[in-house]
Length: 190
Image 1 (cartoon, rainbow, N blue to C red):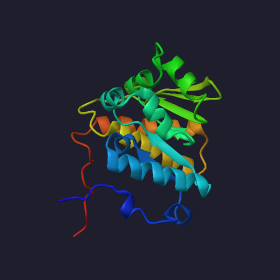
Image 2 (cartoon, one colour; image 1 turned 60 degrees about the vertical axis):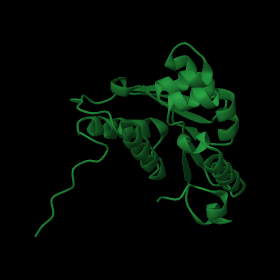
Image 3 (cartoon, rainbow, N blue to C red; image 1 turned 120 degrees about the vertical axis):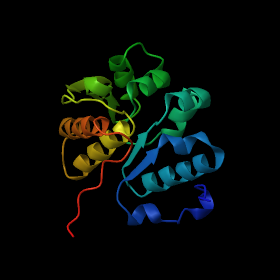
Image 4 (spheres, rainbow, N blue to C red; image 1 turned 30 degrees about the horizontal axis):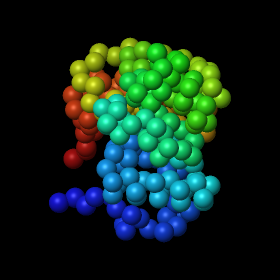
């Protein structure tokens, strides 16, 4: 049986030894994992390690409460909600207004819009709208995670937020063209 993320399992000082920290919003929705996520976020901030957070679920956000989630994620440098999550977190009408509002709390906010691409917001304003490449959607499972992974990898490689969002949109478009959350395995020789 898999073990739950618990504060007892978090290694003190781990944030100082690793790279940037990414937290899934799912960690904030249950007591033990929330405590672990908060500790990891605090340790990373104290060590000067950049933190990104993906809110993960509009339904769970609504149940937890926007204010509670936003307080828990405070200090993260990057917030990566989808449009539904951004609307739940702000109560604003429309993803553009929600993105702008969230970027008053977090230095960089990227709101994913599915087939419509993504919004990049900083300093209380939407600074870019990134188009998604054409895709033949088969299954949306994993599209948000693909976006987040490609976005963060591009940022780690030195891309600016717009170029990173373009990489995320490409990965999301590729993900929706495949059934399931994992791409098919690459052929192996032999």
